[in-house]
Amino acid sequence: MSLIQHRIGGVPVGGGRTLPVHDPAAGAPAGEVVLGRAAEVEAAVTAAARAFATWQEVSLSRRARVMFAFRDLLERHEDELARLVTAEHGKVLDDARGEIVRGREVVEFACGIPQVLKGEYSDQVSSGVDAFSFRQPLGVCAGIVPFNFPVMVPLWMHPIAIACGNAFVLKPSERVPSASGLIADLYAEAGLPDGVFNVVHGDRETADALITHPGVAAVSFVGSTPVARHVHATATAAGKRVQALGGAKNHAVVLPDADLEQAADQITAAAYGSAGQRCMAISVVVAVGAAADPLVDRLAERARAIKVGPGTDPATEMGPLISRDARARVAGHVDAAEKAGAKVVVDGRGLPGPGFYVGPCLLDEVGLGTAAYQEEIFGPVLIVLRAETLEEAIALVNANPHGNGTAIFTSSGEAARRYQRAVHVGMVGVNVPVPVPMAFYSFGGWKASLFGDTHVHGPEGVRFYTRAKAVTTRWPRETALSGAGAMAFPTAT
Image (spheres, rainbow, N blue to C red):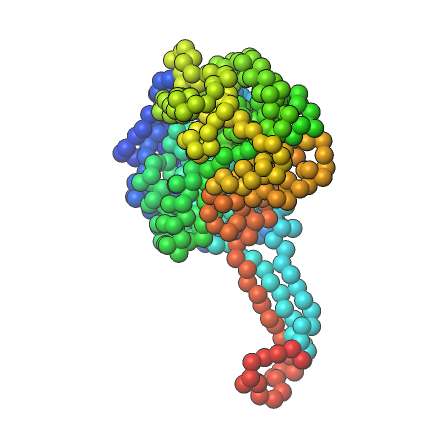
């Protein structure tokens, strides 16, 4: 079996502890990953700090050239990266390629860093006085990322941080570690100096050592809400800048005037793609009025038709879950909801095979107090709720503690505008079920889906990985200023 090592200062580094890396489609180990402790974290932060001292002085033009080269390498190695993702995550190859493309869009945004980092200048703010501002990098930044997007989510972070002049230490999920090693190789081939990008594998012990390390200036995190809350509290207490994205319970509202065929197609893909293991998956449908019964019929028909199997099979539409524990947890949610009175319209429990498979599940008549509705299942389970009016649907969405993403399906522009303004959710789709913003916007939710002040990538990502500096200048015509300096607080003259 392969052994996946850290990448510190440009070289592979081993370690004492290891953990099996499973092939979810086979349900068996396919490799081992070394797990870092405080010593490996210390080595990575030290290497990053050393590299930052010179990288921050590299010109914007050269940083942009590295990003252009890195972007081209991502495109050339797309199939190789996708196969690594499918082997360790289980998602189908087309889905894996899709996440690489969306991550590459962030690199394309980073290629324009000279334009993005342009400061401001004000001439003659006072007599003979000019003012300007610019942004500078923070130092060593860290990223802690989940298993569900081994390439895309890290690409939300490190290209922006590095293009802004920082050095970066990435802790991937120990379940899907291989893609990050290839990313490190591509950075090196693109011309990034050793130590600017480092990879330390590990578990919670590794993550805690990273977020409390005094040499780390900023922490970016994506994961569940409880862990996001822990990361935010721990890292901010240690004086760090933090953006921590938590969990989700994304609702899609379907109005009676919607194209129900199109809505059912889109919601099915958004609910069951990647086996529901997406923070932007639709996990709840709120069917309004007369839309309910015909929509449930259409959703059930499509769910039953989904082909489940290994992600490498071209005929497969949905792969396995990430682990045996995940399979048991998802099936347990369906069991508990059924016992609480929910109607299991489509039942994906009990699929045969050695892999970690749960088929599409569709639940109707689910109580709002059940764990299946209250908690993020992170699996192929779609819940149907019913509302009489759009206002009732909005109230349901807003009552949920999460606020990551939502969608509305309607042919009414007035209803869509009312919805997008009224919901307490960070990302909204109108007839778009997975409203992930393009890279030149920023990704992030509201409420329990985000801890911190800024979203990731795009303009807010640049602001997160830099800090502003304001400068006021005066250049006298004579060799010395005439008159004594005023003792009062200076004002414009």
